[in-house]
Image (cartoon, rainbow, N blue to C red; front, side, top):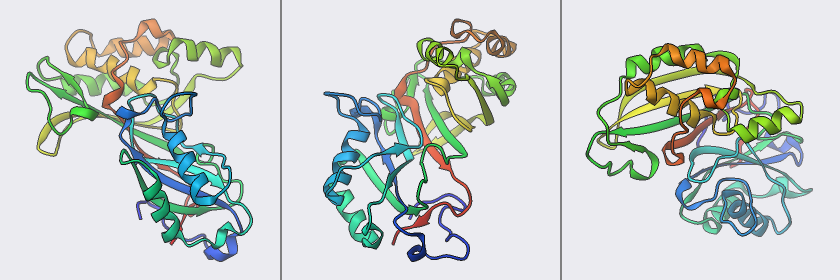
Length: 287
C-alpha cells in the first residue's frame, strides 16, 4: 500500500480490531483534465462525485466525505486522502474486497491507491499536518509528450532556476499570503473573519527529468493553502525566471497583501497535489 513515513504503522499498543468502527480513509490519485475540480458541483463531473457514487455503491448507504485539500478544475493528484466515518459493523469488512470494489466502481482517470483505518472523528482535512504540491513546467519550442497533460508548456527559453530560488526564499515561514490568493476568495475570508496567513515549510525550484523529458519543478509544502496559492506563487516566480522581474520583487509583492501586486496565476494543468502528512500512527493499512 502507498504511504508516507509513519502512515503505515500500527497505533502503538492496539491492533485494527481494537479501534472500533472508526473512520475509513481512502488514498486516491486522479488526472485532473476530465474533472471540474474535486468538490461536488451540480451538473458537473467532479472527483468527489465519482468517489461518492463508488463508496455509496460499495457500502450500500449514503456517505459524507472530507478531503485533505480541494483541487480546482484541471489539477491532478497523486495522493489525495478522503475520510468517511464508518457505520456500525463496517469495521469487519475485508479491506482487499472493498479496495477491489472501489477500483471496479471508479473511472480510469481515478486511481484508488490504498485504504486505511483511522480513529473515530478522524478528518482527512483537519488532521493533516502538511500538504505538498509540485508544479511542472516544460520550456522550449518542442511540445512536451509524456508531460503534456500535467505540465505548463512555456515556448520561451529556459527559466533562470537560481533566480527563482532566490525570489522564493522570503516566502518561507508564516506570512499573510493574500497577494497569492484569488482576490474574491481572500475577500470572503476577510468578511468571515478568517485569516489569509499560512506557513510554508519548503519552496524549491529545480530541474528534473521525468519520463525522458526535461522539466522545471516548483515544489511547495505548507500547513494549508489558499485558493490558487501555489499557482499564483508559480506564475510570480516564472516572471522572475523569464527575467521580467527582479527576485526582490517577490518579497515586495508578498508584503503588499494585494493580489494585483503579484504575478499571473499559472495554468491549472501543471499542478499536482503530491502528498499529505498526518500524525505518526494516525492511519493503519486496511488489509
